[in-house]
Image (cartoon, rainbow, N blue to C red):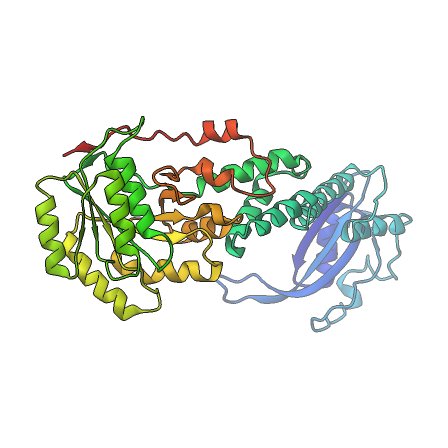
Length: 433
C-alpha cells in the first residue's frame, strides 16, 4: 500500500495524474483547493490537491481506471464540475473496489489504535511503536503517582521535620534516578536517600594555617547555650586531648550583666585555669584583644544574647564586635530544638555579622533535626560544632555528617557504610601562619 498527495489545476487532471502514477487500484481520502505554480509566491493559480493511497498489486497501468468513492465533503469552496468533454474516459459514476472496506479498516485502525489486519506488517509495526510509547507514558504516570516506596520515603522525611521544598527535591530525584523495578527495593532507595541527605550537609572547614591569635566569636539568640559552648571550646583547645595539642586560650565576654553569666564563666575559668576578661564597649574590647594578642594563640568571645527581632540591639552589638577586626571568625549559635518557623528568621537577622558557620547546640533535646538540615541547606550555611549536653568539655565535637544521619528517625542506618562514605579527620593541632 502506497500513500500519495498529488496536485493539479483541476480535479479531472489530478485524477489522470494519479492514474498514470499509481494505476487503477486507488482510494481517494480527501481533496482541497490549493494555490500552485507561480514564482516566489507570485502568479499562482487555483488548483486541487488529492490525498489517498494505492493498493494495486500488479503495478501501474493506463486502463480501467477505477477510483473508489467520491471526494469527501470539504470546507473549501466547491470546485466547478469538469465539462463532459474534458476527459471522455471518465464520465460514469465511480465505483468502489471490492476491497474498499478492508482498506478503510486499515486506515481506521491506525487512527484509533485498534488491531489492523494481521497480514499488514507496516501497520503492525506502527501500532507496536504506538503501544511502546503508551507503555512508557503509563510507566511514568504510575511512577509519578504514590508508589509505596515513594510514600514511605515521603512519610519518613515528614517524620524528621524536613521542609516541604527539601522533601520535594529528594522525591523528584528518586523519581528521576530509579526505575519502577528499582523502586520496589525500598532498602536500596532509602540508602541512597540517606546518602543524598549527607551530601546536603555542609561542614565548616577551618583554615589550614591560622593567623595568631585566632579570634572566634559566638553570636546568637538568648538561651541557646553560647556561654557553655565558649567554655567547652576553651577546654578542647586550651586543655587539649588525644586529638589536639593544647594552645594558649583566653576568654572574653561582653555578657557580664546577665544574671549568673559572670559567675558561670568564672567557675569554668577557675576549673580550667584559663583567664577570662569582661568588656563593656568597643574601646574596652579592642584594648583587651591587643593585650591578649601578645600572649594568646586563641581568643574566644562570648556575646550578649539578642532577640533576632530587635534590630537596634543587634546593630549595637555589631558595632561593638567590629573591634575584633576583619579576620575574626563569627559563628552563629542556634539550638537544634528551634522551631522550624524561627530558624530562617534567625539566620536572616544575624546576616549582618557575616557569620562563617553555625554551631548547633542542645542536639540531645530534640529527636527531629530535619528542620535544621533543610534550613542550612537552603540558605547554603555550613556547620562547625555540635553540642549535646551540659558537661564541659565532653558534650561538644566538630560537626560530622555521620552524627546527623544517625539521629534521623525511621531510616535503617548502616553506620559502617556512612562512616566510610563521609569520613571525618579531626586535626590534631593548629598550624599558625
